[in-house]
Image (cartoon, rainbow, N blue to C red; front, side, top):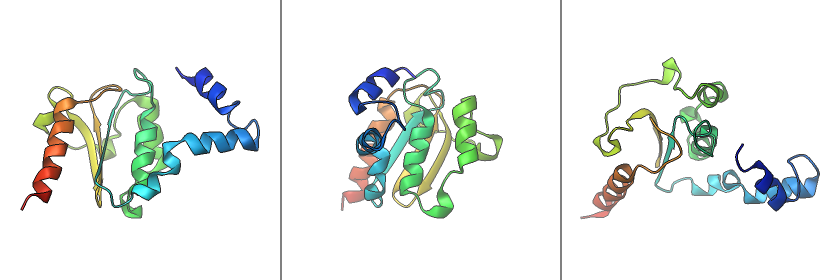
Length: 145
């Protein structure tokens, strides 16, 4: 992983070195705090090749979604592992999705649970500006009288 040395240096060692080091990793990890975001409007996006061509493994985004999703909507560990290892969406999860706001980086997988949505798109570790703007605009429309 690209930042392994920097992360270990900032946390005082490698995961599993001792309880103090492990506590630093836990304190600094967003997953530690995700459950507190349950009920907040979230749209988690990740490129299917993130972690292969990008710096953050796609599994992080999938686990973040699971932390706020209802139990029945969660993505199974086996499916997450498949996406991480193969940089592709398993056949059982594929569906035809067209979302103009993603341009050429079309969604490959999308799931919603309560106020949380995850979209896995055809890309790397990147922001799809059109999709982000469309999401913000949809929030504004929900609140407008």
